[in-house]
Length: 213
Ligand code: B16
Ligand code: MG
Image (cartoon, rainbow, N blue to C red; front, side):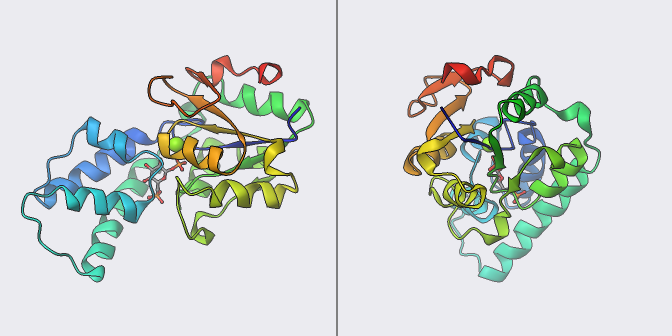
């Protein structure tokens, strides 16, 4: 019944959350901010500057940062992150990811990628799956990150498919909210207690069953 499937990248196709965690932790601690896995969870699906704002807002010192200082901090984090992802390869694909992409392709549906990560093109290259997508949104062209529906709506428009005919796949709460706000069917990857807005939740793409949604 769907005409297109739009995938999120981090947490759905590959697990870059750990690399984001390592890079943000070093940056946060350089600013005297305590950073743990729980904090990292809150950053899933949130863009780079939005994530930095959340980290700095939790600092005990509450000092003001200039826009230039913030850009420099975001840049430091990103350089570290890019170093970490430079060793990624197809072994970093999450179980079931390639099979899910191939199932959608065989069913004759269009395939899009809606990641707010400005490193998404690099990650796809490293994973060796760039050519499996009909359209990849360039995060640099998106004005409002998730939970705003902009990125999913742009993917649907470029694929030439109405939002109502799209299935969106997300692991983050902000991402599921974005899919629902776009008027799409939301398949959550994770826990139903967390992804309460999703239409269906599965544990990983290993359970992906296109005919069931
Ligand atoms: P970058 P997604 C998101 O990707 C990550 O979930 C989020 O943790 C990260 O801060 C964001 O990308 C920005 O990434 O710093 O590489 O531009 O889940 O939308 O694929
Ligand atoms: Mg994600």
